Each structure stands twice: as structure tokens, then as C-alpha cells.
Image (cartoon, rainbow, N blue to C red):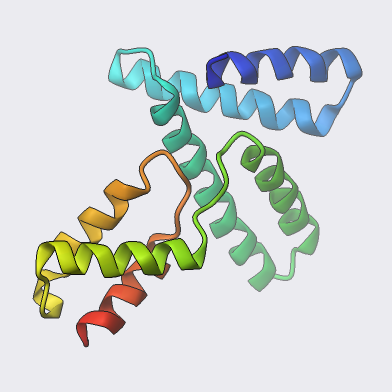
Length: 149
């Protein structure tokens, strides 16, 4: 079953079970995917839907950080709960070990020797993890460390 169909099916189930919190998140996810499809005038495949969901998680993490700084723990907790629902639709996140292995391999493959080659290494690493949630900040920090900033 395609991911967008799974979201619609789960939305119907949440309506039937009167799960208000989950229902609200699923509606937001479906609307975000639909809006992106309208913007690009095409129907998304699973990889593109994953990218939309990853961006939703990023937005929520930023909100959690700002709400925490502002002392609004109630809103931060709500955003954290939304992240957990969205993450159930994503494949397993990339581990730190996988990131380290990929960075080493891409550096060897590209022959990167200095920070000037960081763009090539980052592009290669991100390509290896397409379709899976990965923290670009972690990759960037590790690449800088390996290439000697």
C-alpha cells in the first residue's frame, strides 16, 4: 500500500475510534502532502511523501525548541506528540554508525582532501540516505571533522 493511501486509511480509522489527537495530526499530514502535490502539479510517490513528512518533523522540532525557550512546555509537549505520530510513517532513522560509515566511504570514493570538497561529500552522503530520515547537521559535523576544518 502506498504511503499516502496508508495515511488516508489511518485517518478514517482515527475518525471511527474518535482519536482526536491522532486525527488532527493525520489531517495535517494529508493536507501538507496534498498542498505540495498541488504546488508541483503531480502526484507524489512514497519518496516524495517521505520528504514532506521529514520537513513537517523539522518544523515541529524547531517549534519545540522555541516553545521550550519561551517556557511553554504545554505547546512543546503537543509538538513532541505530533512528531511521534509522524515518525510512525517514516522508515527507521539512520544511525550514527551508518552515518560514519557513509562519510568514510564517500570521502574515499570522491577523493576529498579538504573542507573545500565538503559539498561533494555531503551530496554523496545525502544521496545514500534518500528516502530515510537523516540529520544533516550530524553529517555536516562529521564531514568537517574528517576533512579537518
